[in-house]
Structures are given as C-alpha cells and as structure tokens.
Image 1 (cartoon, helix red, strand yellow):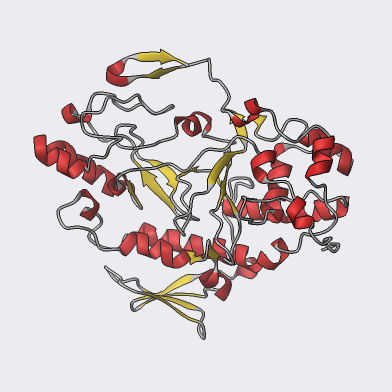
Image 2 (cartoon, helix red, strand yellow):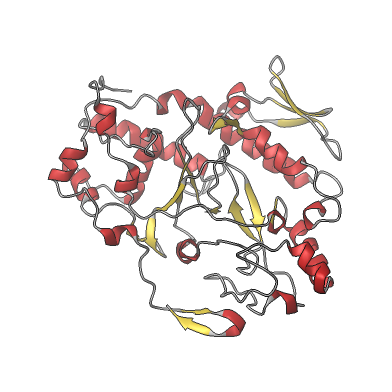
Amino acid sequence: MRGVTEAPGAHDDLPLLDDLMPWSVAPLRFGRSWIAAPDARTLRSRWDRLVAAEGAEREALFRPSRARTPGSAVAALPGQRTSTVRLAREAGPCPEPVRVARGPFDEQWLLPDHRLIDTARPELWRVAGAPQLFAVEQGYVPGAAGPALLVTAALPEGRSPAGRPGRIRPLFRRPGGREPNVAPGLLAFLGERYGHEVDALEWLAWTVAAARPSPAGCSVPVPADPEVWAAGVALGRALLDVQARGALSGAKPRLPGGRRPYVRAAVPARPATLTYDGWDEALCLDEGRISPVPEEAWEFRVGGARVLEQWFAHRTAPQEPGSLESIGPAAWPQEWTSELLDLITVLALLGAREAERAAFTGEVAGREELRAAGILPPPPRARRPASVLDHQEEGPEGQFMLL
C-alpha cells in the first residue's frame, strides 16, 4: 500500500465526518429492553404475555417511562403496519418483528411499534431499505482499539459499547438510494481530484477505510495522491461488504482457503461462560467448542469492548424473574450457533485487515482547502432530513397525516 508521511499538526486540520456527511441522527432510545431480542419467537411470546395482562399488571410489565405509558397516543412508525390504538386497549396480534443492528455486529429483532419505543427516530425509518446503508459513528474512547465507524444495512440502534453517544449517518437522504448524504459539491471535488466520477458508495468505502477517532468526532483525511485514494477505496469496499454481511456482493463472507469455524463439541443448553483457548484456536461456551477461531476474531474490539463477549452477554445475562425480559428460549437455539459462526467469520476477516485500515496517512486536503472549494461549511439544509411529501402515515388512533 502506498502512503506518505503526515505533516506535523495535520491531524488537527482534518475535516470532520460531521461536515462531510452533514445529516446525522442520534441513537435510538428503546426505553425498555424487552422489545428487542436475539430471536423473533421470544418477542411474540413477550407480546402475548403483555396483551394477556390487564390494568395494573399490564402497566407493570410494560415498564412505563416519561416518554411512553400504555395510555400514550402515538403515530405509527414509517413503513410499519402496526396498530395505533392506545396500548392499554390493545388485544391484537404481535407486530411483525424486524431485523435491527443492536450494538456492533449484533443483529437482533425488534418490535417495530412506536407505542413501545421511547425515541424511535422516525426520520431513519423513512429512508431504511435497500440500497440504504447506515454509517454508525462510535463514541470516542481515548486509546480504545477498533474502528471508529461501522456500517450496517439493518436499521441501527446506534449505541456505543462503552455507553458513549455516537451518531447515525444514512448514506442517502431519501428512499431508493436518492440524494447522497454528503456535503454539496464534495463528490464533484473528489472527481476532479482523482480524475474519475466518484459516487456515494465509493466515498463511503474510503471513509470506512480511513476514518479515525478524535474528541470532536470522526475525522476523515482526503488524500492528494490518487493511488492512495484508490487503495483505500479497494480496502473499504471489502470492509463494507464484510460489515454489511454480503449486502453489496450478494454472497456471505467466507474465510479464504476453505478455512471456516465448525462446532467441535455441542453448545450446552444454557452456557454460562465464554472463554478462548488460544493454543487450539477454540471458542469455548462451557464445554461446547467452536474452532478454528482466529485470534483476530477473539480480540476484535469496538470502543474498547471485545465484540464476542458482548454478543454472548446479550444472550445469557440473567433477567428479573417475572419480567417480560425473563421470557426467552428454554435452551440455546441452533440459530444462535449459526449466527455465532457467521460473526466469527466477519470478525476474523475484519481483524486480519485492521493494520491496513490504520495505514492511510499522507498529504491531505485540510479544512481550509475545502472551505476555499465552497464545500465547508455545509449549508444548514444539508443537516436536516429531506422532506417526504409523497405518502401518508398513520397518526394516533388511526388518523392519517400527509408528510
């Protein structure tokens, strides 16, 4: 990979992702953890338990907050056909769960019912769906290892493992891949700089490869050398496809050379511990064993937290007896093992290229050059969500509103 030495103090002049992808949204705030789960069957069981209860029992199971109670009047989420009757009177079937990204590389299921979610960020739901990708900026943790920016095709919750707030940046401002969420004039500037048309996906690929954390947010070098740009884009496209679980290529990520993790000893019904045997490259769930698991997968961290440990904890942490959160599978489902094997592959592929991702330095366009080009600062309208004027959304108690 070709690179050049970064000038002293150049890091301070790097443009921020906040200016280059101006529209961003704060993380979702669920308000109650029982509305999300690693499997959809659990959510349906929890819903059935909730609607079977009445009065004070239903309210206690619901876990009211200042934003939501069973009596709250709430509009439907964009694109979701769910009831808008007050939840205190709800007796209907469970809303169809949807796939979401809940933490780094942890895809789970969510009840997409606005009556259940404290802060759902409807503007994100309006633009979700192929070919949309969401760049999730991780909260800054000094000295923490791991990427500063993650990308997912699933709607992200957006929370950082360290509990620090990040930002969610959709690649497109409108449904159907229309209107890239980049500073006006940036793609044309890049096209002139590198001698070919640069589209939104190429920009995102470079950003995934080159973004770095800072106290002010992610910063993104824009190199002067077309060869550095091309190398970063090539790496970024590979990282993007792995992070998005093959959404770009249409093929699930696989380790090279036919090397893939297998279950060597069955996972027990209720594993309590997760450990790593480096000698045998084995991931141990109590007496269950999966191998080979490259050390890069075990050690892969985001925000300073080991991803595999977080994934396991989300499925095995004890819950309050009698709560909706305590309703879950009686034994470890086979689908969780399949998802774990896929996750190991994803982390191994990303971990093997982490050193490459850190190598993009050199002479860059600083903020002053981008200001001179009229790209910075972005206009205020670029920081606001685009208007949607072509469809109706259901308001509280079945009323419709035109957006």
